[in-house]
Image 1 (cartoon, rainbow, N blue to C red):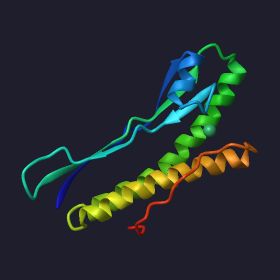
Image 2 (image 1 turned 45 degrees about the vertical axis):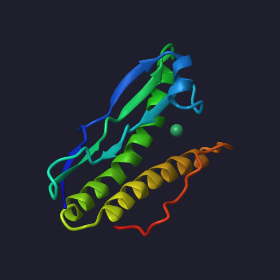
Image 3 (image 1 turned 135 degrees about the vertical axis):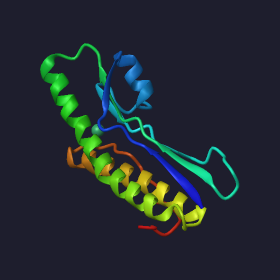
Length: 148
Ligand SMILES: [Zn+2]
């Protein structure tokens, strides 16, 4: 049995970064923009039988500095699509955890987290595939049943 602490800002924030830093932040995938939900899923300790399950998000859209206004708007639109996909997936995760946290075993709670990461990866890859990109994210589906 856990006590859920779920931190999700109401909206993403934006951060301007040098184009060279963009490559590093996106692990070499992007030059102009990148979205990261910065999600984490931890049990940082607590009284036995009353551990805290802490889920944190800090959604950030990174934009390369030096983009002209048209390019900036185009890149922002693209990254907002990733953010919207994230929101569509994070809300069901929150509802599931709120329901399940008092009764579900750890393995099931953790499976929910891994499926969330997989679904987000898949949505992102699908979006990039629809745009005709030849190289998209590879997503490994969890080796556990979907809890919700
Ligand atoms: Zn993208």
